[in-house]
Image (cartoon, rainbow, N blue to C red):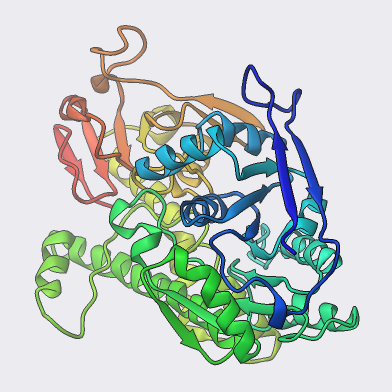
Length: 466
């Protein structure tokens, strides 16, 4: 029997933290094993635990396929942001979300007991690292424990969060077995890592293949039946552990090659060469080369974080991955290098860092998103301010930036939009960290000196590279 899900919304306006929607969940009268469970997902109830950059687009895709969705997030402010249309999504996803929120079958809640109504559960919570770059498993362990506590016969549980090898078995399979539930018979479990590239329409979720590793054959088939709605096609691996390693390999590969791109860019500057020209020349080779480009550094939820879930367990076992370790040190040191380079440029211009007025352009970690997690610009600003420089920032997508307990407000140096404050020529140095292609940066041509960390953005009476 499929559980009944009823959502009652406030008639006049979207629910808020003060006026939450009422979510009524009726558990099934009888529990059926997997072999007797609903065989299709089109009308199944799917619970998505965690409504961040992975969970929300996944929930939208599943609702597009006809599934009834229970979106669960412990953050009331996050739920309010989603209801208000402020979540970071592709435009096509924004349109679908508006339609789903206005209709039935798309419930948002912070109540974890809503899991009782679900046939299929996707765990999409963040897996950050702490200040020492050690994996922080608190959120993941809490989510998995809640899913296990509410698990019932007939459910399929899929972990998508990037994590260390063995997590699916440790956090789901073993606890479920301790509850007396047989994997592949009573419940199904699989790992299928996310492959979402926020803000890039060309890499939308539905066009990207997805890897699945099931605990058993039945687990794979059930997970595949669920996830076929969210991707172009499925790639099967032999186990959850293999799928976990796939994700770690993907992002460690990128980390190593980005670190190499930084090194080559610095070598190019030594020889008076343009790094982009050199990289694009190398990329003309049709095999054996994949272009990676230099920048102010890496940030966000993947490259700066995920490889540590590979490296830390290996270090604990006395098997360090030295190439990857060195690459991450290079990535971690990139913002420090940019700050040092800014100091060097100012000296060349005859100015002192402690008295300089600096504008940092772009504080999100990548183009076309408003996400500042692990953004290199944040560390660059912090380091320059610690040396006594007066630092402003401009980012049309980020109006406010929390920095060491202080709240900074972005400035607009374009006098066509803001007649007050400082203009482009009033800054001793402009550091371009991130640009958003959909916005106008023509005013950069009036800057006295530009340190271009994108290596592609023209501007400034004098232009320098990191």
